[in-house]
Length: 264
Image (cartoon, rainbow, N blue to C red; front, side, top):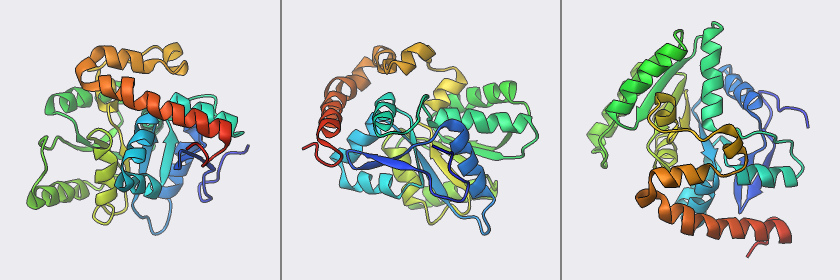
């Protein structure tokens, strides 16, 4: 299957009704860069889609709309890669937001001037993230960073955050608020953020800052990365990995056995 053009639609498949685009990292980056070249440019947002997103969409009609409206749904989770391969797509490697961000950061070292804004997480993680990004990609253009309070913002606070982001004129806005909050935030602000590309980054800020351990590649490719995350945060993640995910994995298996849209 040939890579999508920067102007044409990306090939997609559905997992329990949620769209996933059948892309690898290089193809996804070409799509994003193509959006930056559009005239006029417009706002777009990206989801790094895994089993958590699929499960949340299954539990919430509102979040299902968030996932449906997103402009690019990256095949981040290994179970999604398995499904995509069964549907005939060539997806040898995961293509999540971290892989795409790193590829874009690498372009800065080659002279591509792309401006990145980092929103969310904690001030401590953002400080460490700035230091690590500057060390690994000294030519990277960091437009700004901001950690909002861990509570619902007032309309005035929210407006101030949006204005601060827009004032820096970023090309990319990476949001680390956790799923489903970060994708919902990008969806709800789609008419306010102007011609930039937003992406839900989740724990990628922590990984790039060196605040959370990454599973070895062989563990990731085997679909066992969840075990490391569960061991690191059992109180917060036990229900997600031991109750919610198995339920949706079984639904995915039934869908594959019976055919798309026939898992019930």
